[in-house]
Length: 144
Image (cartoon, rainbow, N blue to C red; front, side, top):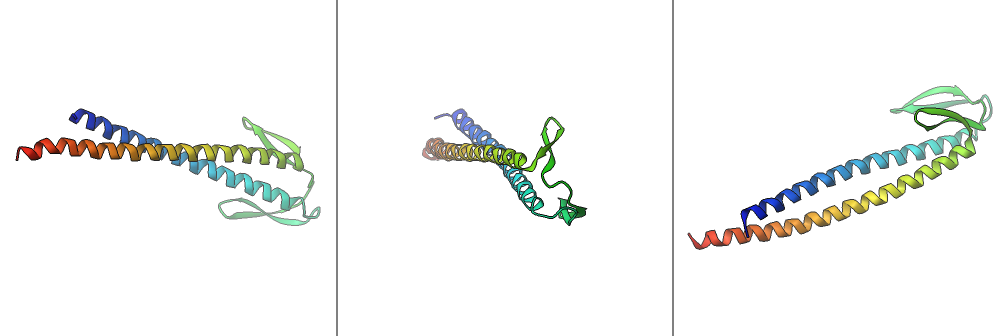
């Protein structure tokens, strides 16, 4: 057992921890996106229930709401990607949101699996590092 092998194992642990932190950041982003999509879907569902010209409070983010009056409750403006907005029927937008939510949930599951694999690898590498450390200490203990 050499000190170089021990250093390589420690480096692998550090690299795996960095990967785990990266996956954790990605998990946060995906979960926030799921929450955002669910809020949008709920807002659309509530909006379609109000009467025409009925006053509503519309959330604009950060706990802030504005007063608005309901207009056409059958359609809304939605992003179709690349910063392009398009008018679509609310039912279609709800289907799009459902599809995006499912994709995001799949991504979240994949990230959870990645995190689990990396955590397992870190545990195995840590066990190996402890064994290597003990092996490196034994020859030194005999010389004392």
